[in-house]
Length: 221
Image 1 (cartoon, rainbow, N blue to C red):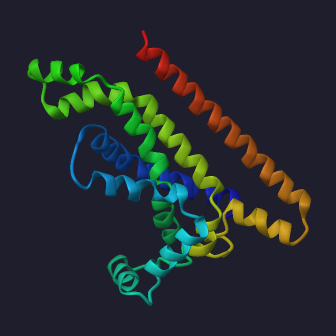
Image 2 (cartoon, one colour; image 1 turned 135 degrees about the horizontal axis):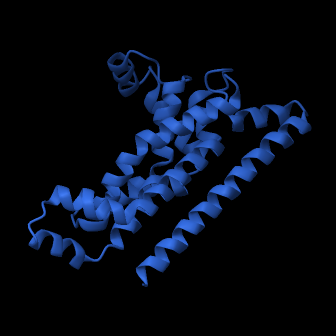
């Protein structure tokens, strides 16, 4: 599998697995008040401020079969989590957590409390309120979270290199392939790959901006 398709595969798995988590955590942070809220938010948004190599080092140490946690996870799952695609997915879930949570949290926060209260007074259950009222109003935030998660996964380098290494067909993603091309002075190949990533990133940002503008317009109608 080429680096491009491996990156697409990683981004798809990360987005599909992380989106439900983002919806759950985003809703909790938007509506719930509890003592450990600050700690939970700090954990979720830590990847935004922590250098990728530092985060990658701790994940490598945590997932290593030489550590108790890594050995336990490897025994439970039956697969190695270091220098493997499965380990890349797990690391990618942690790295991209803030991108999946923040847009969803903002979308839930924008729903007026009176809307939910009116639903409950009308006899609609909490689950029905969530599925029939909250989710339809948050679809733009959810789509924004999916777009950001997918795009960021495609370009992730530091954590991918630390946890996955550089194994052809297994962990050599597009960002690693670009690095290899530059190291080999193959600037033409590196230029083509970086141009593709740049175009996709710009398209993703424009899509997020468009979704944000639509959300803002709807709130002020």
